[in-house]
Length: 387
Image 1 (cartoon, rainbow, N blue to C red):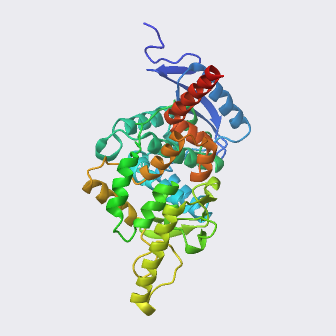
Image 2 (cartoon, rainbow, N blue to C red):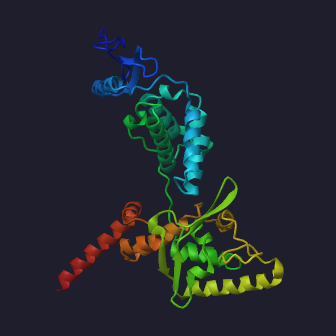
């Protein structure tokens, strides 16, 4: 029988199942003593050889990482605190990072020593998440899986920089895709029904702006009256509000730099906003000295900024009452974008209006853009025939 099949060592290399490993003698940077260490998780013998050469070079240069019992939880707690202290990301991103750790990474890998993490272990962990790591044991969505991998990658790179690991084992993990989570745009008839039902709600203007601009929920919650120019019919979007760990926050920027934009409003949403302002002035009179003059467009009855979760709750209850297809609030942004593209508006203009990349527009709405391109081809062909 083949020695490789039995898992026996050959030239210091060994194959068990589909994974290769090797043993080498390295010099401990602390004790200065030579010792045998095994490394595994390589898909091919060539990968194992390349890694062995790198580690042997590290050992000769005194860069070999000494044995440690630090766990994945210890490492990521340190990394996350460091990230928070330096404000390396926006609060919304930090909140997302924390959720990935709390719900996915720490429960499964937290007690494992970081130096025992291998490409094989990480690949199996990610595959298990895809199979049933989501809500109610559903397949994890592609977006969430990408966030989990991103957090693991940042944490392990942090460990490498601090010489707790000699390399990041995630780099050799094969590409794994999660469940594709599709948002299907509502029809214009469904949007009309939705807005008609919400027309008597005190936050009616919120949903009109969401439908007519494609702005994100956090961007709309952060709007102040000073951002609205009734005379020039423009709306300046340059901040975002949200909630993390039960606390509200506001940042002087949007999701990305493209989100900082000034967009045009036509007469319909402007009239709704005027009516909304009149209603807010009545509330100001009713609350008198108890009114909180925050300057926000969308507030509670006492003038304090609206809870960023509240519009979502209103939306979900309304679509349930109307028996509309269950979609997230983000579907209003999706619908706005889809209808503009279907009407022949350039993806570059659409991207500027909703504060996103042109590449994202082309990728996310490929079917709509493709249909528009086909229409363009037909129009040109007809023009030639008539000529």
